[in-house]
Length: 81
Image 1 (cartoon, one colour):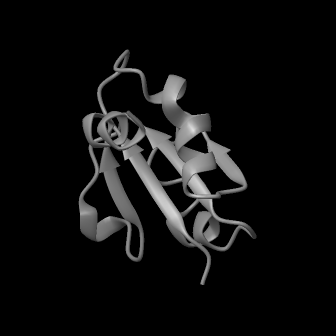
Image 2: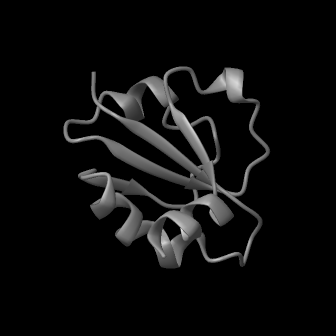
């Protein structure tokens, strides 16, 4: 199973700025910026070879993204610092 990480946070919080570094940290091949939480589906994102980082400011119910690791922007910044 490939890896899917969903990066969440409010608009203007720096998600896009850290997305490349975060994808590199987790060795993910794909970044989907401005993901709306629905399309493409989490299953389609998880199926991308090499893994995927989906960046969103959508309000997500964690149960709607099964099998994904959901990380907020503050946790991502702390991990990369």
